[in-house]
Image (cartoon, rainbow, N blue to C red):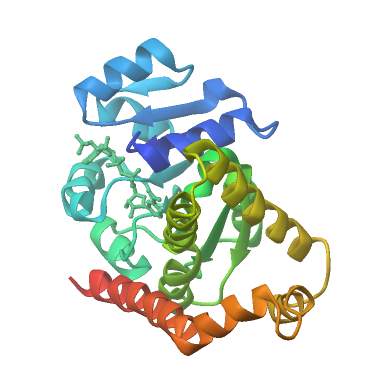
Length: 267
Ligand SMILES: NC(=O)c1ccc[n+]([C@@H]2O[C@H](COP(=O)([O-])OP(=O)(O)OC[C@H]3O[C@@H](n4cnc5c(N)ncnc54)[C@H](OP(=O)(O)O)[C@@H]3O)[C@@H](O)[C@H]2O)c1
């Protein structure tokens, strides 16, 4: 099985790295194509992949083709590759908002998997949601799932609405967590902690809370109740958040990302 990643930017490279480190794939079976001369030169010097600057030299050999360019480059890319592809090839798109229908119609292909990864994929802790066109067989889907899982975990969703929805939760979600972290860092520094101490206090608090959550069956609400005693410090903080409607504001933010993903798909 030969895999081609089109677009060797942040995400394309993350998948290439993940797949090449996994036992599933010999790295020499992994090809990368990008149109940026600078990037190609750097990948040729620093990476172990087969790097191509001509799409016609790599695309005919590929069984699975990852589409990892920015959504606004998709149309140009489709025009470029359409004359070179065949109907047996499997296309895995991670382009936000670009629908399976659009890919099938633009490329006149059948087997398309649409996936929504997130940034922690870079450290093998990503979560990817994916769904497929009806022409993708069970075996092909399993094979692609194994490839996606090389960057973390994945969940299969029943339709593309959930891909846009997961953009609002996990796709954009790391930025919500960073927002929360930044707020706590600023509070810690205002209280007088050094930059380094603030970083340790905040990052270990997030890490520890997530670990507690993962190692139990308890909901975040139950954990909050465990930490917050009546009249205590945590209760004061949680009351302040409730008074300011923070929970509703976070939900609104997730929906804003979801709505934007739907909008991008229509543009
Ligand atoms: N980053 C994330 O956290 C994230 C999360 C979920 C989904 N995604 C999706 O992942 C995709 C890639 O994002 P990214 O952040 O990795 O983008 P990126 O860093 O800009 O990488 C895309 C690469 O593709 C190249 N490219 C553009 N058009 C091309 C073409 N026709 N043929 C070959 N290469 C081409 C670009 O070259 P130039 O720079 O010269 O244009 C660039 O090197 C996007 O569609 C995005 O929606 C990203």
